[in-house]
Image: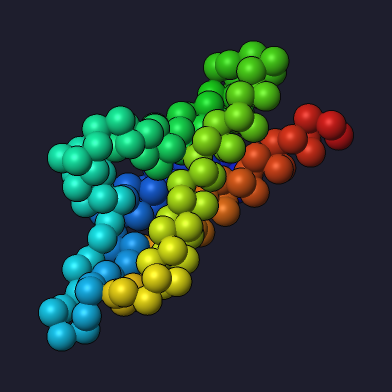
Length: 146
């Protein structure tokens, strides 16, 4: 098993950790305490107010990354034909979209100055997982051309 496949399969461990880990702590005022927000807690909150948006987050944050990992593994082991390789690129774009959403939410919340948001360790795990996934996509594209 190659190092790239090990990295890819390790994402099946790191992504779920990132889904339950606190991404950030948010509060209106420091006096009232801070609430930890994870991807799964965010989805649960969205599910109660906006099911459509919750489904979009589920697709971008959970389904697309796992589909990308499994597609990469299937290509690496020869279980998928080589012409399926472009799907990795498209799945990578979907899986990357949630990082931008989180960044926008944090930027908007900090810019409003109403509350306080502190980045938590889960955001780093999630970001690192997405970056490794992107790196694997770039490697896959370069091996296709080379």
